[in-house]
Length: 180
Image (cartoon, rainbow, N blue to C red):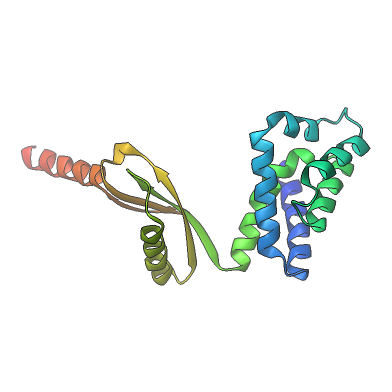
């Protein structure tokens, strides 16, 4: 049920954003609001609590996000309050992000490294993967010292494992086959 609610509201917001030529702006604002909620969990709890008067919640939302989000998103946040759908907000943000990415032919992925990538190195990897897939690739860099070195790229259900740890595991298997 929550999945259907998130999909329905994300689709409605997506259509408004496309019509107003604000697809990326709304996506950035949604991310900002979600990050704010995560940074201040008490605030998010207030937003989600049905016992608090709807009008009071709207006043608080307006006060906090005034001049920080578009009127379209502000109205959307208020609609969620009126319809008692605030608990679906995070799911809506995720669904909206996927809709916006699909619309713009963007695929998001993760590149795992031992140390943070320089922006130009990340851009080179994104460009190479974009050329391979025919889609615009946006990568998020995660740090994992256990890979020892190299990179691991995850895009959807595809994995490109160029890590030293993977090479060592392959060598170990090869040696085990030779010895047996």
